[in-house]
Image 1: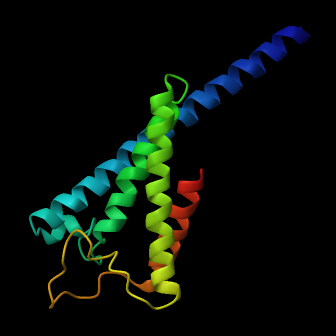
Image 2 (image 1 turned 120 degrees about the vertical axis):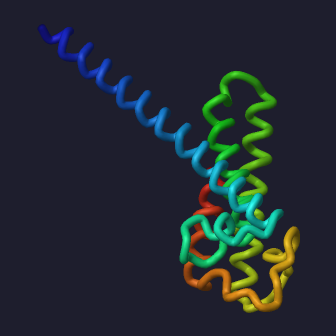
Length: 149
């Protein structure tokens, strides 16, 4: 009977791990989709797509790219055992996310403008503030942690 209990616990643990891996894959797809949606919003100047949810401030393009690269990193991490190229691509994505997070944290922490927010898409001069600095710091810290994985 004791052997059956151990086997049941092992089976339960494997099911839990599979469930977490599935959730992680879904999270990577959601992150990529949100980032891509925001980039499309910036490309075609569609305000609804830039803000993720109606009524919220717009997401900066560098944040959207962070979502895309972070999601790709997470997706590739699940394939890491398959090939060395998956591992290198995941590492490259993580490095990009880390750089986006660190550079933007430096901008807000030292009140300097490195031009990160306007690097790819220029915001119109009459645009409403696009993000509260406190929220930006939290997202950048998350990006830094995501990049360090």
